[in-house]
Image 1 (cartoon, rainbow, N blue to C red):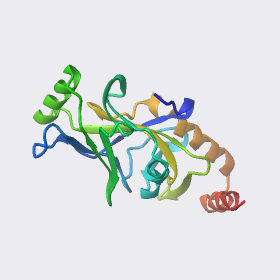
Image 2 (cartoon, rainbow, N blue to C red):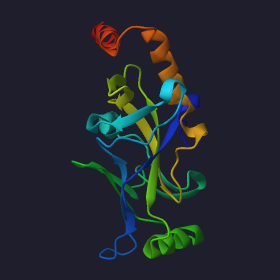
Image 3 (cartoon, one colour):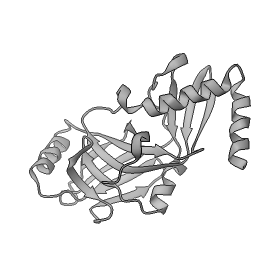
Length: 200
C-alpha cells in the first residue's frame, strides 16, 4: 500500500455507511463530509476546528489515485480498491460518496452483518494536506482550519471516531506553526501573509 509518510492524518466523518439491499452486497457510504465543522481537535491556545472544503478531494480524483477501502484502518482487511474497480468514488454536493463491492471473506461477511444491524455505521479517511493546501481563520475567538487541497489514499469503515490524539498530531503541529507565525498579529494579518505566499 502506498504510504502518505509521517504527515498522514486520520479523520472520522459524520457520514453514514450501510449495506445497500437493492444491490447484492454493495456497501455505500460517505467517506468525507464537506463543509462540516469537526469536533475541537485540541492543541495549544484552546485548540481548533477543521472543515473539509469540496475542492479538497479534487486532486486525488483528478489524478486517479489508488485508494483502498479498509475495515478500521487495518491493511489486512481490504474491502475494495479503486484500481481493481471494487471501490468507486464520486464527488457529490454534500461529500465524497463511496460504493464498495466487498470480497467473499470472513471479515467482509462480519462487517456487512454489523452494518446491517446498525452496530457499525461510521467512516474515516486518511489524508495528507498539500503545501499551502489549508487556510486558517478566526471566528468568535476560535481558530478554524479549512482544507482545500489534500491527497487521500484510504477510506475505512470504522466502529469508533478517529479523533484520538495520535491521529491529529500533524494538524496540531500546523496549529502551533500558525500561532508562532501570528505571534501577536491578527488573523487578518496571517491571512494576508498566507495569500501572498500562495501568489508567489
